[in-house]
Length: 137
Image (cartoon, rainbow, N blue to C red; front, side, top):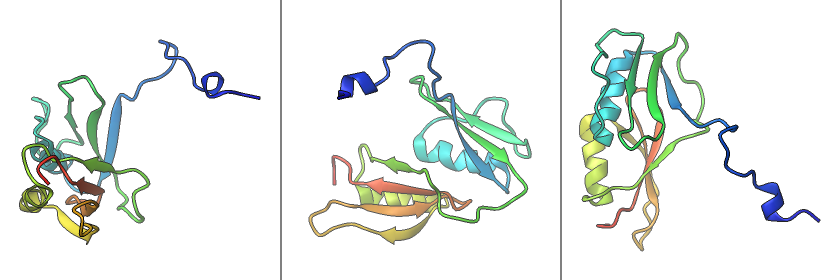
């Protein structure tokens, strides 16, 4: 019988790390990067300019970067991977309103009567993300 500890790989330098999370976009990568930069409070790279074929947001804490790359084909299906964002210093409703002011749109509100749940949103290119309840509600 195999135990959990036998199935879990041990952390080593031989395994890959997630370097970037890449967003395909048909519009200007700089514009989509700017949306996420404002939403997450992380700056775009100093060398990123409007019209560039890609734009980059580094994580100052050393986590994966967000890379925005122009592609010819548009989005045609639901994302198989998305962000679940937890507000800090704002309520979920305030974070949703802020995201809307930056160009996002609400797809569905799954807020429950007890305050749990989430709001499903899309960025200007249609990439889904969720806003969960934060410590302020």
